[in-house]
Length: 397
Image (cartoon, rainbow, N blue to C red; front, side, top):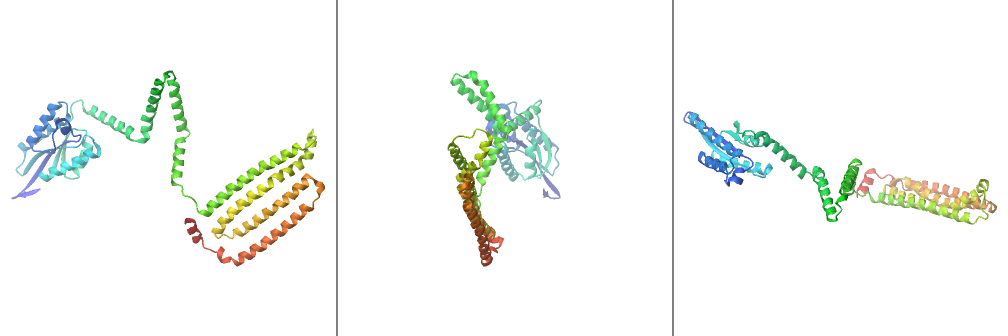
């Protein structure tokens, strides 16, 4: 407001808003329009181009309201009329254009309040834009008879159509499935196999329901996310995991090797046992052949697993690495114990000397390993007392 003498001047702007930009697209008129004459000429031009255009009716209403306020105004009031346009693209583009034109109008006519005139449909989008820059004292909605519900229905329909087309979550179903069916129909028509189209529809729908029903799409998406975000573990952990896998493979192969060795032994038995009692008699020998064929790979597999675990424990400064090393030595020597046991099972006549010798030596090795562990643990006490912080730092590096 500005003061003139003892009176305060009140500047009122009647603002007509064409949010979808029909003035520019249909009548070729540039906005903003300021003044009664410019607005009247533009409204007449738009009405001649499209007599059913709701924005033309809104402009005529704004001009009529301007004339009434001019006739009824008080001495301190100054009334002006203006029209601004958005864009046929709608959305953010339209709002930004409206704001730019409104700023231009306010620079030419510094209004104290605005009377907003719209076609009714765009009130929710336009009103906050205007109120953020100048107070709105009144809103005049002009709706052509029988057009409001149709316009609202068209707006809702276009909004959901845009959602279906532009949102991948919905477009895959709303457009992807029909598009695939149309493509299949075209291919079958080209190959003169349209009779199989119903079967193709059932196959596509069945596959789609299976994928959705069992969550295959979500599993694939989660796997892709895991692969993309996967971070390899620290190097000692990788070595331990690799050694574990290699050891398990060795043990699995050892079972097959032992089975093959026992099968070959069965082939050398003449004559073959004819009843269950006879088979039970040769069963210890067969188990001995199984041990002969499997024990080497079993020992190698277990030692490999423990060796990988020992590397990880060493880098973590864990004292259990010493016990792990002793266990590797014990498992390594157990190969001779099981080999002696297999010899006894195959041919008891050979005696138990090798088996007893292997067991005694194994016990001595175990005792020696314990003593070595105690000595190393005492001499390397500082190494195994490393803080957990250093261990974590190594893991992160």
